[in-house]
Amino acid sequence: MRSSPLVGLPSDRKQIGPHPFHAVGEKYLRAVVDGAGCLPVLLPSLSPPLDLGDLLDELDGLVLTGAHSNIEPHHYSREASFPGNEHDPARDLNTLSLVPRAIERGLPVLAICRGMQEVNVALGGSLHQKVHDLIGYADHRENPDEPLGVRYAPAHPVALAPGGWLERIAGSSEAMVNSLHGQGIRELAPGLVVEATAPDGLVEAARLDRGVSGQPDPFLLAVQWHPEWRVTENPFYLGIFQAFAAACRQRAQQRR
Image 1 (cartoon, rainbow, N blue to C red):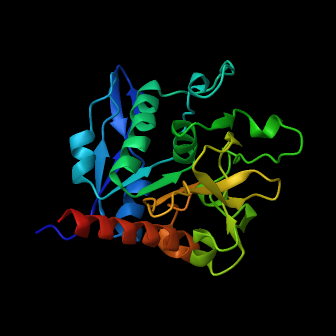
Image 2: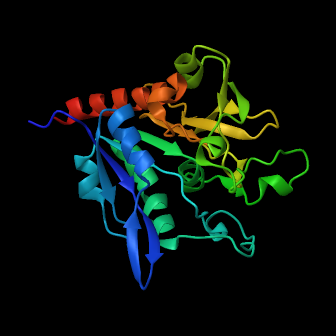
């Protein structure tokens, strides 16, 4: 009998030469294996999207990864996309439909960077397209000319919500995180509650809490930073993946 929970990761659709490919960053796969002790399963982002309902029933968790692309703004506002804004329409159609279906099935979800934005949009929230252009907000982007180790190094603290999941994981009211994003949460979706905020007030993490008495929500944690980076070397990042893994194992036991 299979002992490791199965975790699905929706792919990016990337053009390599004349052909489109489906890809997931290796750092996310390694984090699922090394940080969560689970087996990763790549979910293709085809257009039109596949009906992945039967596959979701066989999974024990879902990780929505970061990506270079941004969600097309027509999914959450009437704003036009800005010049040079990279998009992945196939991934949008795939992930935005997967989020509510995962919640419906009680499937644990860990959403990272773009993944957090996908969760927010899928549940009815909206985004800032350029946080760095807004008065009162910091520039949360990385410098692409710096080495990866510098780009993924701790960049700023986040205040963790009192009594929240992340405060329990960190064992503190504050944690240092990396910062590699240009977009961010404008309006938090109904059913999500804030788990962490940046010094400028930007929402940096959220979890599902629909407030329905007697009906506990499935595990859904969304973070704007990248806890997958060298996950075994950072106790806070590792704790996030271990909390997700515990929910995946519980789901696997229930299914069996």
